[in-house]
Image 1 (cartoon, rainbow over the protein chains, first blue to last red):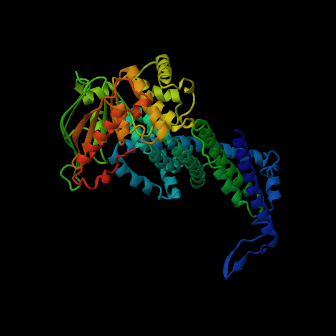
Image 2 (image 1 turned 90 degrees about the horizontal axis):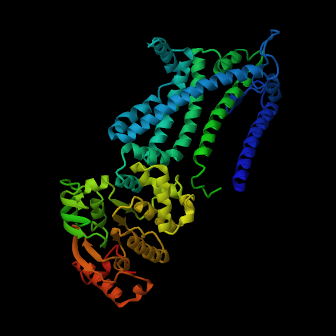
Image 3 (image 1 turned 45 degrees about the vertical axis):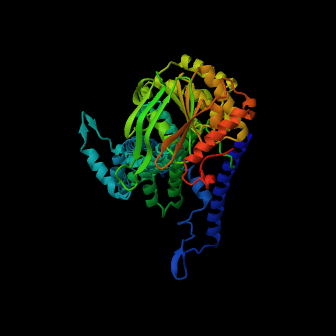
Length: 294
Length: 270
């Protein structure tokens, strides 16, 4: 237990060290980097180090405390960013649950029917090569035409669906691998008990799949965040962090620090989703054999 | 009524393809209730296949398998047998007691009955205080004892074992053999036991079935008479060694090349 605590402390420490390192690099480049950008071996790749392109870190941080706009009753920006991130978080959560349900169901189906796997898997792979930006307006227009039993498609649901679209693939593939990881001897044992396919799925295949599913769900969680943010941007959905990013980016010449507040908000959103899965990981794996390597 | 009856059974894998394997050809075997029968033979002689046919994990190509006067399929559905493999195969995510309860859970027993039976089985294998531990906290021999407890949890009349002690060290192995005999005597369980080891087969069995490969078949059945109670002294007894010698000779007879008797691959002489 003590060792585990130390490992957690070490990891948390390393996290902050790496963030500090990036911050130091940022400020260092601002000192030594060329003000108007520069060429390296004749190619213009060095970014401009002036305050418009790369505002100081303390400007970004202090920007959080200042009001969003110049009007007198404007909220401080930390509040606006938090509200936007929370809005997107809820959309991402819906997308994540949608994507996990579909992903796990597909994986179970593919485990059950070999032909399903052979027929379906290539399409799943192809689905991920479709650019999200191209898909976003389509989903919005399809959703707008849906009216089933008095259910009207809210605009935000399109963003969640696109989040689910990015989330389901790693989850389906990871879960499929996990479900197939049950040892042949254990499957034979369940057979010898005349266990039904469902019993085998619940009592053997899923528990055996957990170590494969956790990293897949982590990928899925970050996928759902990316999906939602990109969908907000490309469909112009209001209220979320994606919308804030483009809005603030347009104001970057006059207020360069502003866009970074929203970008950090999006990063925090991704971390929150990953943290949620990590929590589930700890709960589900508490009785499993511990890795002996540190 | 015989516990196991195998009549004219053959098993051919990939029939009609270039990869065709005659795993078993015309096998006949009867095991009486309460009997301990070992199947021994070199790799590829079909002893594991025969065990899986009895367990109805495989269907015979021809012939008939009866277990407790029922078809093998019916007795699998009725869970008339328990099974143990070389790997204990305990589920990592279940406690020791929950592992033993697995077959009972699948049968739909209620919680208290399951817990009581699990405790009874733990006492049978002499690990009563280990109920709440996780499998990975146990040694290999302990894990195998839990696997035996799991196999016997539903009190099946028949126990099928596929090299259950193959992965254990020699000391643990001999201890486990003694424990298995004690458990089977207490529960009056019939056992069909697949092994690579000649002394193990002789020590445990009433009869040793000697098999030979290509095609897999039964070549000899050796009666061993070491008496009802066996102890560590039995391992030094005259008739133990004579049993080993007859099994060894029967195994050599399975090879055309007598001069090259060392080539009985896959059979341990220890």
